Length: 169
Image (cartoon, rainbow, N blue to C red; front, side):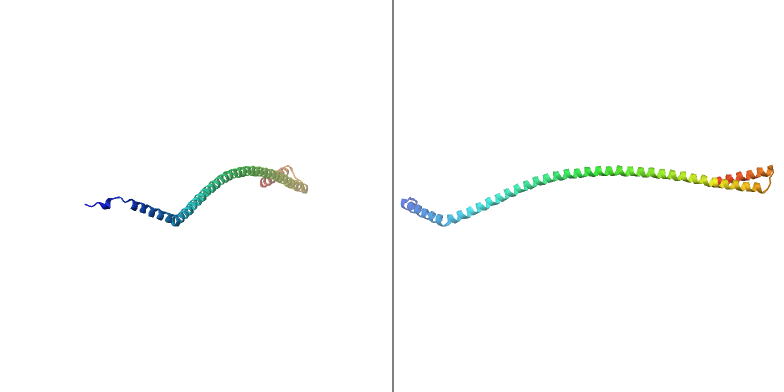
């Protein structure tokens, strides 16, 4: 049995090592620079993407804080506006009530004055009628001589007319 193929030849090992080293150096000179450049470019792109993401996150947090501050300010302003509106509405309501009370008082006073004036006019009219009737009665009495019965009858008629006139007024 021949075992020559199992022997270790130092020359072949050395030749294989030198060939491998030469191939490695050629690949390193030709390929590794391009691969390193591509890897470096990709690393820069990844770093830029992370930086943009960090900037966007910081901007979003800043905008969120601004929005929260603006919302708090808007809520406070809305509260103040509502408070002012309530005070204004209450003041206007009180003014309207005061004005309505004054107008009602004026209407009552005017109605009272009008009633009093109408009473005075009615009295004057009644006095005028009484005077006219008294003059008329005096004329009738003067036109004829009357006896006691006629005199009593004229007075009764006069009183009846006065009563009827008073009821109509």
